[in-house]
Amino acid sequence: MAKPFHLAWFTSFNPPAWRSPWGGVSGEEWMTGEYHISMIKQMERAGFDFIMFEDSTMVSDAMGGTEELDLKHGLHSPKLDPFPMLPILARETKHIGLIATGSTSFYPPFILARVMATMDHLTRGRVGWNVVTSSEDIAAQNYGIDQLLPHDERYDMAEEHVEVVKRLWESWEPDAIVMDRETGHYADHTKVHRLDHVGKYFKVRGPLNMPPGPQGVLPICQAGGSPRGRDFAAKHANAIVVTQPIVSKMKEYREDIRARAERFGRDPDDIKVLFHLSPVIGETEEEAREQHHRLFGMEDPLAIEKVLAMTAAVTEIDFSAYDLDAPFPQDLTTNGHQSVLQDLMDRNKGKTLRQSLSERAQLGPQVIGTPTSVADQMEALMEEVGGDGFLLLAAPHTRRYIDAVCSGVAPELQRRGLVRTSYPHQTLKENLLAF
Ligand SMILES: Cc1cc2nc3c(=O)[nH]c(=O)nc-3n(C[C@H](O)[C@H](O)[C@H](O)COP(=O)(O)O)c2cc1C
Image (tube, rainbow, N blue to C red):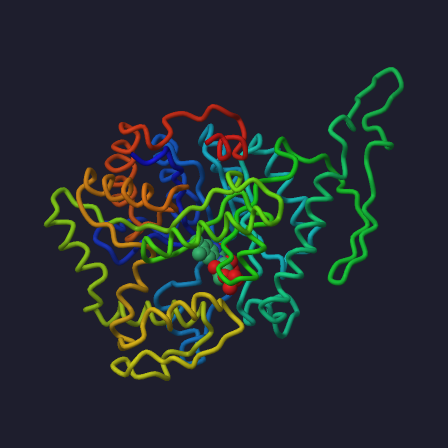
C-alpha cells in the first residue's frame, strides 16, 4: 500500500472553463472571488494541503506576433493578481494553505517580503510563496526590463533575492515586541536588525518595517525543471510542483531532487514533490473514456489553436510558423522554459506537431475512470514513485469537475487512509511537513 500523501490544487485567478456546458459562472462572479471561495471550501473538506495560484503578467503575442489568440481563448489574460485573494480565501476557511506566485525578476525583495509577511499575519500562518524567475520578455517589458537575464543567470538572481527575503523575515528577533507600558517601549531596537545588503543584483538596507508572520520564514514552493532550476528548488523549496507525463519520469525526478537536497545538507523529507494530475472522472469507465476523448481528442480546431498558443507562450516559440502535419521540430531553442521545450522535443520525436498536442493539453500521467478506479490509479502511482502527492489541475475548470474530485475521488482516498482528514497544526508549513 502507498504511504499517506498530499493533495494540492493548481489554479489561476482567471475565468473558469466558460465554453464547457458546466462552466456557467458569470464574469462578475469569478472576478469577485466567489468562484474560488466555493472551490476552496470543498478542497478543505476534501483534505487538500493547499491551493496554489500560478501567475504571469502579460498578454501573450507568441503566436504570430499578435495578442489575438491569447485574448480570444482567455489564456494569459484576463488574469487577476492572486495576492489580494489569499486573505479573502483565508477568511472563508480555517486550515487549508494558500500559495501565490511572486517573480524574483519583477518584485523587489523588500516589497515581496513585506506583502507576504503581511499575508502571513492576516491568514494566521497559512501562506506560502511560489518562487518563479519568469520566462517571458513581454512580461519583463512591463517592468522597464527590455530582456530577461539568460535562463541560468535568472536563477543566480533568484538565489540572491530569496536570501534577502529570508533575511528580511529574520530581521526582527521573535521577542522584539515588548509592549512595556512602564518604560513606554513598543519594540526593542536592539532586537531589530538592519541588513545593509549590497549584492550583485540587489541593494537593501532593511530591516523589514514589521515583524514576520507566524511562520517566520514562509514555506517556499518551486517548479524548477532544468538542472539549474532543480538545484534551486532542492536548496530552497518545501513543496515542489512538477509536470511529468509518465511514472518512470516522475520517479526519476523525485529521486534526483532528493539527491540534490542531500548534497545541500537538507533532509529530503522536508521537500514534498507534488505531481501534476488531471484525472478524467466519470460515473462509469465508459463515460470517463468518452469524456477523455472529448477533452483531449483534439478534434476541435479551437482546442488545437488553444494548446498551440499556450505552448507558444511558455516556450516563446511561434508555432504558427510550423506545419501541423510535419514532424515535430527538433532544433528549437529558447530563453523561456527550457526544460518544457527540451521535454517536448524528446517526447515527440517521430510524431507530428498535431499528434503532440493531446498529451500537451493533458498535463501529467493519464488517469481515467470512476472515482474508485481513479483512486486506485493514484494509489498505484504513489506506490511506484514513493511520494509525495499530487497537484490537481481541473480539466475542465468547472464546479462539476471540482465536485468530482472533492466529493468522489478525495473521500475514497481518505477512506483508505491515504489523504488527511484533519489538519493537526495551525500553519501551512507544519501541516505540510507533518508527514
Ligand atoms: C506546476 C508548475 C507551476 C508553475 N507556475 C509558474 C508560474 O506561476 N509562473 C511562472 O512564471 N512560471 C511557472 N512555472 C514555471 C517554472 O517556474 C519553471 O520555470 C519551469 O518549470 C521550467 O523550469 P526551469 O525554469 O528550471 O527551466 C510553473 C511550472 C510548473 C511545472
